[in-house]
Length: 567
Ligand SMILES: Cc1cc2nc3c(=O)[nH]c(=O)nc-3n(C[C@H](O)[C@H](O)[C@H](O)COP(=O)(O)OP(=O)(O)OC[C@H]3O[C@@H](n4cnc5c(N)ncnc54)[C@H](O)[C@@H]3O)c2cc1C
Image (cartoon, rainbow, N blue to C red; front, side, top):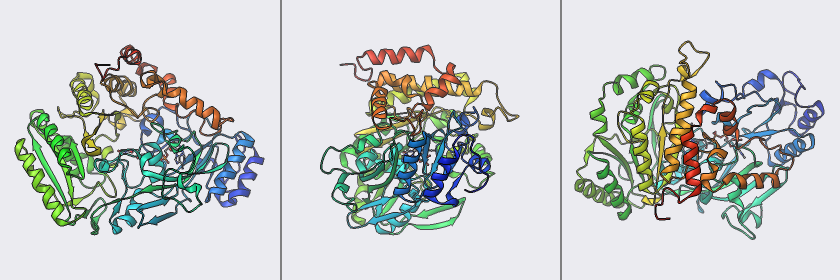
């Protein structure tokens, strides 16, 4: 065993069994080593500062599926709760509310097999998007990189959300992109799904003999580790121009240069949202575009800033100068065109796009032909820079009508004094939204960015009551708007409570409970998930749930569904 041996929460016998599986080097109960696993990553400012996340009792690092299965069986034998983790980008996915967890760190499971001809890749947990794209882009193939960035596990992201900028062309649903799956059930049995029923090397198809149960791995937002461990996954790749994306600069000022005969960014400013929407509609009809992103004004200042520690001041220096009139009167659409088949395709798409832009009075802005965000890194870290915390509140995915109503509701709320006192002022711009699946679907996020230092009770800058107010904005104000405008939220269990909203979403939790009881009779696979957010709100932020939200959920649950006045 590595480091100090402490058997307070996990019996010595069980630790010896774990040692015999992975070897002395790869298991530890040392509190110093375990402390490194206290919740970090996204939402640390809530989960960590409020004392929800804890250090695990022990950490184990398996290397193979067989080792994972034996560890899980050991956990069942000794009734030890366990949590699997791939890249640990989500603080709320870690040990929460209890100290007796075994943390299964999957970072040694880092292999990848690429099938270029059949356009898929088989991955273990620790392979991240930057690594995957490093290999696939050279061959003219891409996956779907999420906002979480190049450092995020492809496999974990596919289990959690799986959305990103490329969803205009590539389906947003990671469940539709994956093929075969190798899974260690909560009881430690190894299952192989999809075309893997043929043999262990057949990773080409999601379906196979018998029912397709792979959807069980994801649901709406994933299980938070509560449904065993996926040890390998095959996911589809998609064609993109085959030229290399050439790296330039050094971190924190780096990018890739686009091959200009095959790819082109075009930024266009419109004077009304209506003109943007009409442009989006016509683009979809014409079938052009690769990334179609309606970017809020402040993103430009985030993207323009450079450096590390000086970064925040640079953002405020430029964003601080912008007036509400300037920002709210300018709607920026950022589009990436790609000639996947040829240079002629790019030229054709550009001509069609320019015709549409001209029709709706768009003004083309300068755009550097480089990329810092879409293929490898994504602005995920940048999202922390303006205030030190990425204040994602809730999301919606639906028709443009629903997404528009959701954005307008939030824009009105953003002008309230309480919002302006506590959060970054977006100065009247529409919340971020994107066109998905060639305009058949739209996606939007509602944000409230508090200052991280003001959220931290241990910091001199701490602002009394701010965490409570932030949580009310996130859970109730945003949740109410998303729900009553007919959008499908899928942040439940990730940043909002599952059970609270469940009646408005077909009592989703009843199904979760049924599956959980069936597959995890000993309740050892991340017990408490995917309801940690429910527990956190009930016990630490009960005032985050307003009566108005409760009324909205009751009303939507009773029907007719608010998004569909005809039903
Ligand atoms: C700024 C920001 C923006 C983001 N934007 C997007 C976005 O646009 N689109 C999007 O899809 N996502 C987005 N995310 C989410 C991000 O992509 C997730 O963090 C990612 O999906 C999961 O990777 P992770 O490192 O967080 O995984 P981990 O923290 O390692 O795991 C996440 C959860 O999955 C479980 N898990 C991990 N590995 C396994 C396994 N092998 N088997 C079973 N369960 C497992 C864990 O127990 C945990 O509960 C964003 C995150 C941030 C911080």
